[in-house]
Each structure stands twice: as structure tokens, then as C-alpha cells.
Image (cartoon, rainbow, N blue to C red; front, top):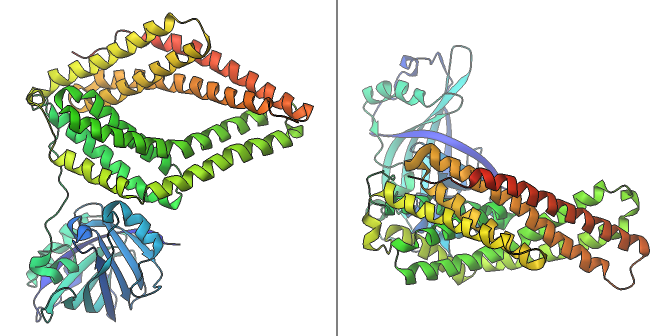
Length: 503
């Protein structure tokens, strides 16, 4: 299995004859270990159009040194990266674990060798007065060959300070000693960038403007979309590798993006927003099926455990685990297949294109505070209408559906308030909190209703032992009570949220 760590380092360009500084001149450094020399050979991989390089992601296979193997580095900040390591394996075969983590970026493109770097590295450890290992200093003499070019290679020397137990303040403390020796801050943050020279692509990441109260309303939407797109892509790898809550988190990000497009629809070209919305709905369904089955299974089994005769409910438990476990496994495999389709990759491309070149109408130029408040209040009024409609329906499936519509409207209102929290402050957060509360309460009710229907269908199955049928019926009764309790809680929460509006 891959291992994960983070590294924080800063690079300097040094001349071939530049003398290494006296490290004890750095404040806090009391001891320096002797030099340790290693020879490193690394082959860097990327797609033909260098999508990883454009995102400042590096993938290499390195031999030599204590950490030889495959290294995937994802940027976290100016000097910090998350590093994922995998064993050496085959020279030209990127490990599946790393390909899965990169799939949301490569989007079906093949990873092939990009450059080869040979490095003679001399390392010294820098220690504080108490013997704490502050940082390592690496003196690298590098020879690089662009495997897709015709040049004979380039040579350079660079220094690297990598933190071990020191804080980022150590960089500032060390800078005077390094520059006094003749080194200068490196022009490139990664060796591969210098190796490629003019072939190094410009950064692809486009950071949207921070929303301003008097700025155009489209800034609110684009900033929110950017945050949720980053969340969606970040969880792609977790879904593929079966990590914890990744399916739930990716589904939530897709829902938030779709909600934002619907909320801000008056400011957008209808055709573009609608097309993107349909694809997000498809992705949401693919993510929702395994997630819903997992939640339903855990819910029913937890209630089964609470029954007085739980020790005799083995057959019922087995049937529930089989029914919902099979649904989960089948839908999860279909989800994995969907994440490797051209349709999904095209959706990611479309999202980024939408963020970078939003199909906005003239309305999107209106001042953000006033225009966004109107959209949030529209979402609140929509929820009010759904509430009034539900009150007209006495009970049964239609009543269940009506309350489910309120839940969906509450979720939309919650997302609307989330988008404007930066410019409307406490009042937006108050609306968000109230809408979230209603969404959760009615979500609990909907889960109870769906679980109850499943249990009724299981109880109606042919040839069931009497005890097993009784267990199903008792569980269904418990879900009915849960639905009633949730509806009572909704009425209370509704009273508190009636008049929440933005100004």
C-alpha cells in the first residue's frame, strides 16, 4: 500500500563553485552532522500534453537513497507538498494506486516518461541546542535529459532546505547564511521544471477573485464553484480506493455545484447551465446508489440491535445484509466504471471551463450583496411554498413526497446561504444553520420512510419463518415512530426559520 507524508522545503540556485555556508551561523543551529553522499536516478512521468506539470503535480520513479520508489507529489502551498510513495515495481508501469489518485487529472490520458534526472546529493543534518533535528541541507548536482526533446541535457547545482522538526520560520532564519554564500532563491520550485526549460507549461490553476460586497455577483458563484470543484476532485481518489467518507463527500460536492447552478440560474445562459446540471445529476445518481444502500444497511442493523429479541434475529440480519450489501457492491462497481468513462472526464473538463469562462448574462455584473440576497430570499420563499403545499395534504405517500420536497428546498436554501456567507456574514450563517437543521430532520424522516417500505417488502416475502417476519414488522413499526418524531421536530424547527431573510 502507498504511504503518505508531507514535505516542506525551499530551494536555492547555487554556482558550481559556490561554497557551502557555515550552518552554525543560522540562529538556532548548534550542531551539524557529517556529510552523507548518495546518487539518485529519477524518471519523471506525465501525459503527452503535460497536464500534471501544468497543475504542478510531479510523478517520478527514483532509485537510490533511503526512499527509493515511486513518488507522487501534490502541491499544498508555496513550500509544502503532500507526498505519496509506492514500491519500485516495474520501471515503465505506474502503480495502479498512483494512477487512481491521478485519474481526475489525467482523465484517460496515458502517463509516459518525460525526463530523466541524475543527482549527486550531499546531505547534512542541522540540529538545535537540545539535539532536536531541525532540518536537512541537501547539496544537489543535477544532470537532466528531456526524454521528449533533442537536447543533450542540462547541468546545474541547487541547494535544498527540508524541514524536519523546525517550523517554517526556519526558512527566514537560514536565508541570510545561504544568500551570503552566493546562492539565490530558486527560480523553479521543482527540478523537473528546470529540466524542461521552455517546455515547462504555465500553471493551469486559475484562482477566482474573492467575492466582494460591491463586486459583480458572478464572483460569488465562481468562488463557490471553485471550492466545490476542488472538493469533488480531491475525493475522486478516495472513491476509487475505497476511503472512508469519500463517496459521501464527493456526492455532497456534486450536489452543491448543481444547487449553485440552479440558484444562480437567472444570471447564467440557460442552455449551458442546464447541460452541466444534467451531467451533475447523473454523477450524483451514480454516487448516491452505493451511499444510500450503505446508510440504509447501517441504519436498519443499528435498530435491529436495539430490539428486545435481537439475539434471535439472525435470519433477518442475514437477509438485510445480503439485500443491501449486494445493492452496495453492485452499485459501487458501477460507480467505479462510471468514473473511468469519457462522460465523467468530459464533465470535469466542462466544470473547469465553466469556472474559467462562465456563461454569464448582464445580470451577473450587478452588485453582489444585493443580487445574491435576492437569490437567497427566493430560495427561502420556495421552501415556504412547499411547506404550505404539504399542509394541504393529509397523509400517505403524497404527504411523504411533499415533505421530501421541503427537504430538497431546505438543502437548496442551505447551499444558497453558504455561497454568500463571505459577504453577508452572520445573517447568512444563521439561515444556513436553520436550513441545515430542517434538511437533517426531514432527511431522517425520509430515511425512516424508505427503510420502512423496504422492511414491509421483506416481511411480505414468501416462505418466511414466523419469527423473521415479526422482526421485520417490529423494525417497520420502529421506523414509523422515527418518521413521526422527525415530523414533530420539523414543525418546531420550521417555526424558528419562518422569517429568516437577507437584506
